[in-house]
Length: 179
Image (cartoon, rainbow, N blue to C red):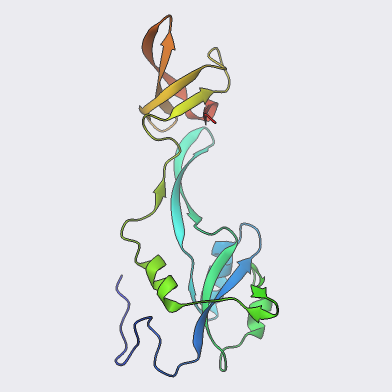
């Protein structure tokens, strides 16, 4: 979705002479999306970069959206006109990040770079060719090579048994990345 460009806007999206800056908010544990929603309901301009991750949930492989920076989001505030006091009582917000009593800010170019990532970030649970360990069942303790997903809850793994390779299907929840 394209953002509108204001006439006379600078490269980072700010207006000449404006007092706005991007600040870092620390959220309560696992409440980044709640804090984002609550801040947007109060008409604050916020940004929460996310990452798509494949996870095993209830025995099935599911794609989840998680924050790129756990417990942090970004907010654009005006140093004069923004209501900073409302931030403290916002659900999901812990505090504004500060170092030595000075609030941490980010240049608008950093936020623009995060927003303009060319491909949606997606992290897979296992990549083809990756070494995996089998945690339980009759093959517990064996190591193999992940080949591909076999439906929502299973994966094909290449195991070497009796000096020959065999492709076997395992439940995803019993596989782990080999260290």
